[in-house]
Length: 390
Image 1 (spheres, helix red, strand yellow):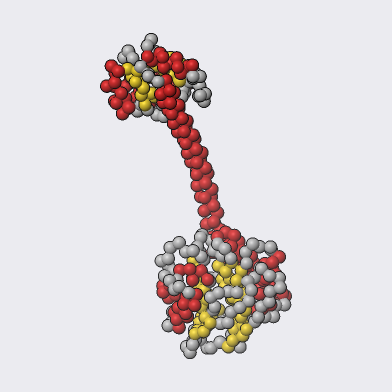
Image 2: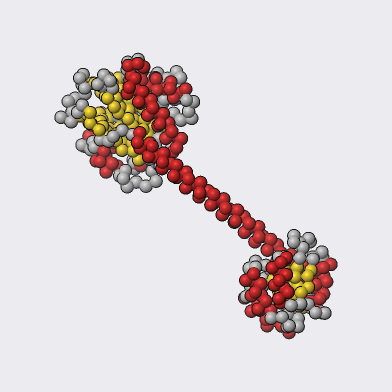
């Protein structure tokens, strides 16, 4: 066989059995270097980095144990094979315990055994070398990955601060109506988005939106939603959007023009304080919005297609009268992921029962659903309330 670096070192061969081993290895194609002294051996190892050392105990002129220990300090993986004549057999075990890889008893009865032992030792060394190289490369990649993850984490946390600054003040009271929300992201950034504001005609517009997917890609869409929200706040009359269904149609067109990979579900409502009415439209947002008063708590009707998917999508506007005092409670569908009930129907019924029993504040809903204690949230969770007190 051809050795990769082409060099074996044989220490202390004299004429005899170990010389026969040396001759066989040379005849087999190995580049064999014979070195009679310990210092010369260590110098050669340092300079040429051989593939194997054969340490002969034939005449005892070299301190085998000392040399082996020095070799191990210099190169812990370099294979060392002991050539031991019968009279020095008692030295084999201590040398093996100190790091020798194998031994051959002299004289050699079958040179095939020499060939096998040498080849296996070299293969083992080469495998260790390959593994260490792979480990170094993996460690290097891991360092790069860790550095990139740290950079990504910094970027996402910076983006989180930007996203948080886009959210409206909570709680926020305008014209006797109080808006409050809480968002729990599954990652650093959230695809759930909420906004509310007073329109130029004094009506109050609000919405809860859930962008498909998680993390940064979904969070980027919330930036677009905020931009659209600002236009609604300041340009609703110029945009000539007369109803909540018109608003959803407009948002749908704007999202389609951006050619996004994500789609958006949304519940959008407009409160007219003077008429004590709510106009709303739904773009596939689920679970349904709960409207609660002193008399009853009901789900508002749901329907519609998600925004940003279909150019032909149509949306309906519905109107309901509002009592003197009321609470509207909204969730994103991420809340279902942390609820123990087995079916969507059971989960909806539980949410309805919570609100019916008087749990209508962000704090109370958060506490009863365990939102502050849940770990590894699988999906973004948003809780949103709109309250008109007496």
